[in-house]
Picture 1: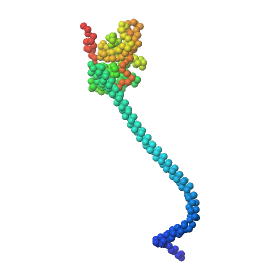
Picture 2: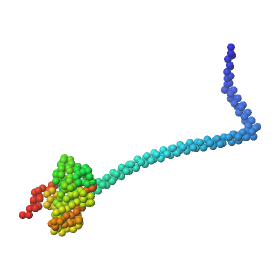
Picture 3: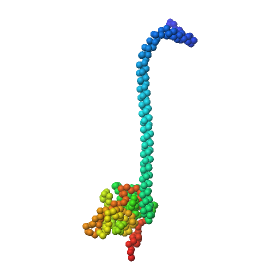
Picture 4: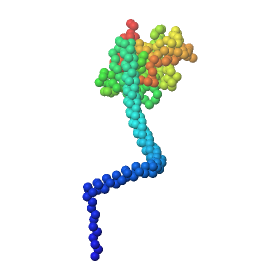
Length: 291
């Protein structure tokens, strides 16, 4: 039978004594063999120093990588923050521009309102127009509930825009003086000579519409202003239409024609004033009754 091996156990006090003796012996040997120990330390140092430099270099590289990553992340975060602030500034800038434009439009409407104090008016916003570059037919956001009625005159900018042709409860449709189907009885302010202003979308691209049926005896010149005539059965008297140019005699030598540059920008209409008064046939008869 095999004998069981006996386990050797050393008590803690004995272990302390042993380690103390070993340390004492090592101290004595280090003093006695100091040169040999120094030589060994030098050899070990020569071996360890390059290794330590390599370890330090690797550590610095790793730190540099982490530092670069951290700096990149900080830049990304900063870039994100700046983009957010820029978007906010752009939004505020757009809002300021809209407010500025709104204020400018209101100022123009106020000046226009002051220019035609004799007529009651309602302000309206253009909400849609025909699918072309010009506002020859468009819709406004005011209707019968706001006191709008058919044949009411519409003004904007510095003068006449057109006339209301259809009315709903909360909207109205307007035909402007530039539309091909529009005719307005006009009058030269300086001479009181009458004429007909005819819409023409084709010539409007060159900045003018047409003026017809000018008396051959009318003493008019380029630059004379034309307003709505008292003879008109739908347009109230004295609303500025535009300024004439290119006055020419007709082949019949009885009448003349001309071009007229409207005072309203029909390429851009946002707000208008509707004159809440309709010219009746009774008014026209009273104006032309000289007996």
